[in-house]
Length: 336
Image (tube, rainbow, N blue to C red; front, top):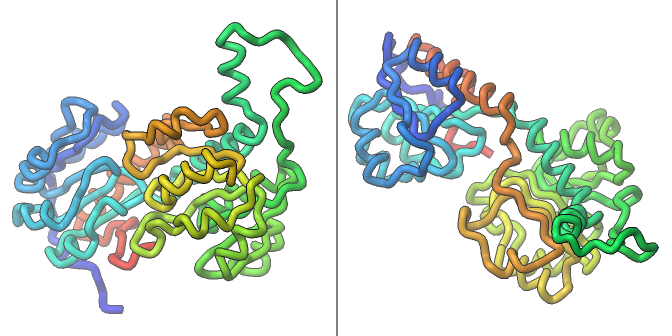
């Protein structure tokens, strides 16, 4: 592959525009190092506001809520040379368009792995054990006390967990799940080294359909890109057996949400734990009405520690670029 690193001109104090409010200590550090324009509120920016920003900065710091598409990149001024994304996922950025304009793209990988794995494990436990239903029952004031048949759920020990995407987060989930007595199965584009499979007690399935037909609980940890969009379509959702629980803390566009709701309503799936949606923040009203679905507001990475660590990575990437070096977290067009 040809060297994708464009010209690294030195930029001593670049103008940096940030699209969302970041932790105070991160913003303070950015202001000290760069000519930083922080966001004056924490709401999603309009397309017009984003166009004004890319026309007036050396570095744009967007988040997953910002659509950095080809049209926006085409509207960028000549000084924009770095898009330093705050977050690991870059499916909202047109990497090919950025590359064509000589604009570097960076992200913040690795720092949110443990937080997302923790949230995933919480969903894996809470959906079969009906924890959200139980919490609502207690708050309603209608709970009549313990009974042998009250709020029965399903134990997870001894069940087969199917992990789709065995990268950093998938492996962290596997390590946690093994401690809960789950048998680990996974589908990945490439098989893990034998020593790592042995460490995680993981069985590889080259065929995703075979994994879905085997697992009792399925959890999604692949990035959203052209290959994974609607990876769990209606056909694949219907391969899962009626007692299966589906967990998604990756991206909503990986799962056909309409097909998922249909299967849940018709009893062809036992339940779901969702931290992301296809059209978030809009959620299908039918999902909201289902008692066997646990929903959290895209908070898989929402820890103070994780947000600060992401901000520090953004700063490291900007400093490296400003000093004329390749940023440590440069994203290539073929990113997976």
